[in-house]
Image 1 (cartoon, helix red, strand yellow):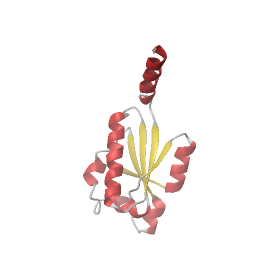
Image 2: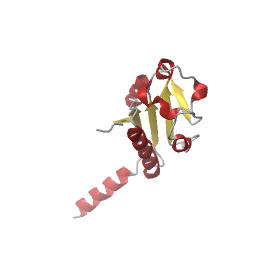
Image 3: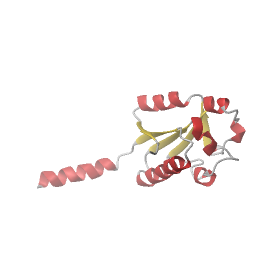
Image 4: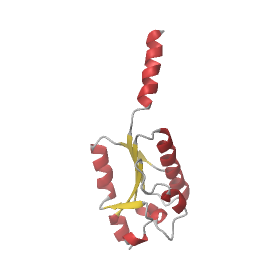
Length: 133
């Protein structure tokens, strides 16, 4: 019985260790975007010592634009956040003719979304693809 109790303690203790997760978001679907932001908020609350990054590109681009985002208020909650960062692909920005001054101030840009995700994974970050069926 002691072994089972010890294993339970170790499992709970392991859940408290900091984690690093990169979220991949390309969907233009507002429900998927809403879900991604909800996941970030919940993960931040559950693992406040961890790091989470949302990488936005492709059809998800409008969600991080000042004039187009239905989630501007939610995204701005992460401005200057030490746990959550939101990054957008400069390649997608170029393809859709978007400049950096059109981005919400809580959003940073990276040269290439796929390379950003690859780099995070090579540094040991977990990976989550945000999508809905």
